[in-house]
Image 1: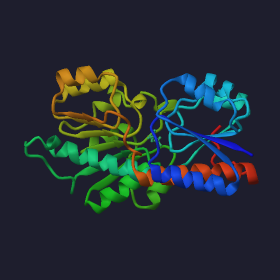
Image 2 (image 1 turned 90 degrees about the vertical axis):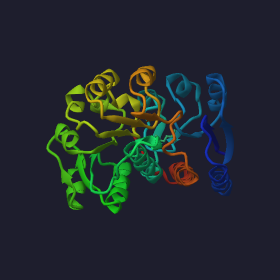
Image 3 (image 1 turned 45 degrees about the vertical axis):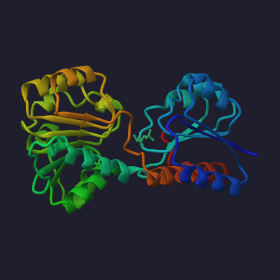
Image 4 (image 1 turned 60 degrees about the vertical axis):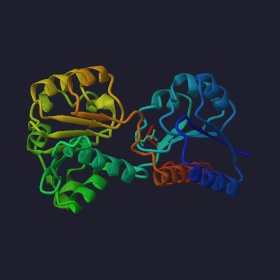
Length: 305
Ligand code: 3PG
């Protein structure tokens, strides 16, 4: 009997856990669940005997992957797989997958929520503004950005995008694709970041790009803190006193923000973009089905390593 570990420091909603269990039971698989575990040792012990694992932002580094002697597949129930050491997985013949698009609407709704929070002056009582008629710049055009586009358009925003890899998809729906990232930042009232924490995107939001932001604009980050050059962002916010930074997850330089930029930022204490029952259900169920399809049919459609 195949054994599947669900390892989630940040647990799925109970409705998702129930559904995932039901799917595996029907397929004749055994499920082991560890939630809110306290130490890496808990994870190392748990992975030792399982054939598959479903995780969220849980760190599957080389030590964990080496300790998982029977592991054949790990599915990150979500989009970003920067928490998994792909090289170590490949070395150990472990397939790594994500569940593309499954939690995208939840993250997109948070991005729009953060934009509203910013333009309304964090509901501090100061008169704010409205998003309708403003220009939204999408930095990247993956599943989350496409959902942000759908919502923003319904709210009457003008939407532009900078993307290197999805130019045709953007143009096909009549979206203006800017020639450069600098042009996107220069023309937008709200910039929403939707690039993964890998390769050329790491620290790509640097002063070279940030200096083009309009004073008074809002930078929304529901991606990863790693894509931001934090010292450059601090420098920019010091120079352009109207810029706000709204981020899903607290940056390393939080102290500087609290000392210098009161009323101009908001950070979720823990990554909250995908924290909805719907997103947990969609991503969790997709992960379970992908594991079963992998073992029963050899399906590796969502493999990322
Ligand atoms: C993702 O990459 O899918 C999101 O950042 C959600 O991450 P989480 O599952 O850790 O909330």
